[in-house]
Amino acid sequence: MTAHAPIALALIDMQNDFVAPGAPACVAGAAATLPALRSLLGLARAQGWAVVHITREHRPDGSDVELFRRRAFQNGQGICVAGTPGADIVPELTPLPGEYRLHKRRFSAFLFTEFDALLRRLGVCTLVLGGTQYPNCIRATAVDAMARDYHTVVVTDACSAQSAEVAAHNVFDLSNMGICCVELANLPELLSAR
Amino acid sequence: MTAHAPIALALIDMQNDFVAPGAPACVAGAAATLPALRSLLGLARAQGWAVVHITREHRPDGSDVELFRRRAFQNGQGICVAGTPGADIVPELTPLPGEYRLHKRRFSAFLFTEFDALLRRLGVCTLVLGGTQYPNCIRATAVDAMARDYHTVVVTDACSAQSAEVAAHNVFDLSNMGICCVELANLPELLSAR
Image 1 (cartoon, chains in turn yellow, red):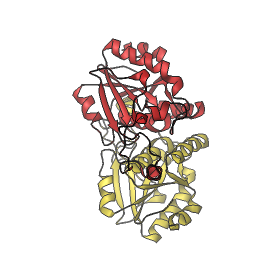
Image 2: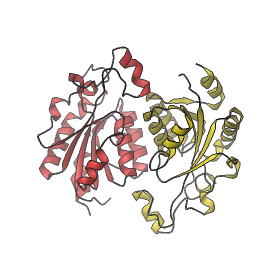
Image 3: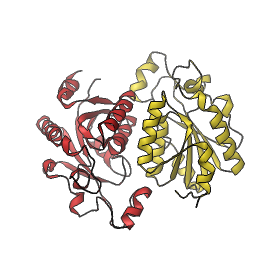
């Protein structure tokens, strides 16, 4: 794969409700990716990439949530409700001033958001992804990025799922659709290869 | 799951280039689903559902194909080129007059097409999917339908992949995101349950 500058890093759904142990929608593998995500974020900052922190946010009544989650909201079990601590980005990945924030309501960061317009305005050609979780928001965002002709890179040890098996199956599928799945240690070499 | 009328059936990518044995992009499991797909199509016609035949079509130069496929087109190995026999729907599933045809250029039938507008105009609430292949066009279309609040049903024995293992992993993920995965034999009962 040939990388094309400029590059953007998007961190997806690294919020307390998905990451904190015992949180209502905790993804089992998410907390373990925090060291890799901190390193990835550090790399992006050192290299001057655009950084976009993407989080899920919902209204308390669930009127903007997927249908299959609506009942949970009606029962007072909503997740990522705007203004609650559960919707906050985990402290380890707190955005710096000047980094982009973007809220989404579906799996894909491209759906019903200005993400594509932002990336185009920034002239981004290569999109690097980390966060949670593999089968849902990571995959939907990666597939939508690939479909929009971004060179799409999923950093495998900076993404998580409920199990290693689910992660592996998704990496298998993503790799078969021209999405580059690479460990963080190999990311600089991948991006410098032209 | 509660079904909501009206219902549409979308058949996806059942084209010679994906289905015919030895075709350039043959999906190993696709031909075996033809009997189930014929039955599913017959059910839809008997029930008066809207039927949408969705196929991939590309320009010969590949200017409208995903980046990861572009080189194949440049090497004269394009697939689903408009006007070629490979782009045609397999004879077993020939559309009837009055059924909808829709061409797409990406995995999801919703991306860069009028599919969502068509379903809204028809008042469709429940979208039933069959075709090929599971990790790519079936899954991307199903996820996009779910995200747009359609009650989404994947008919498991009317969809295919390169292997039964890939199919099973994708059904596992889809089921976890509120998408109903059901065998054809159980579809009428599912849709009548209210």
